[in-house]
Image (cartoon, rainbow, N blue to C red):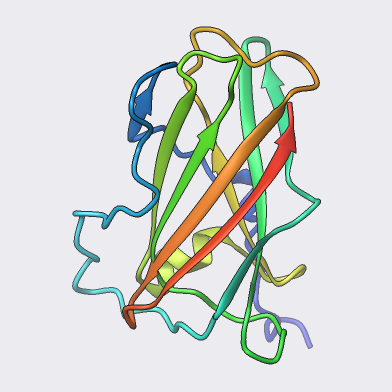
Length: 169
C-alpha cells in the first residue's frame, strides 16, 4: 500500500526550546503556570484535548549533540480518565530547577494549541509527547545531580494538569 501510509514525524529532532525566563540562586523562581501570549495562527485548526493526566516518563534524558551543548529531552505520557494515551492541547510551561547550576531555575513555554503545534511534539510511534529544552547555564549542574522538572498544562478547555519528576544530569 505505497502512498497510503502517513509519514511519521520524529519529534526528537525538533529544534530545542530556549528558556523564556530564568532565576538565579536566591531569586524568586518562575511561576509554574503561565499563559503564552502568542496567539495560535488563525489558519491552523485548534488541537483536540482529552488528557486528564500528564506523566514525566523514564525515557527522559540529557543529550549532548555537541561540545558545550546540553539538551534536556523530556518525554511525557498524556493520559485520559481510562489511563489510555490521549492528546493534550493548550499552553505547556516546563520549569526546571538545577540546584548546583546557574541560573538555578529556567522556564520554557511550549504552545500546543493547534494541530500543527501539537504534531511537532507528538511521537506517533510511542504515543507520547517529546519536549526538547536547551537551558542556558553559565554554570552547569554537577554531574549525576537531579534536575527537578515541573510541567504544567493550561488546556484549551480551562483545566490545568501538572506533572513533576526529575532527570539525572
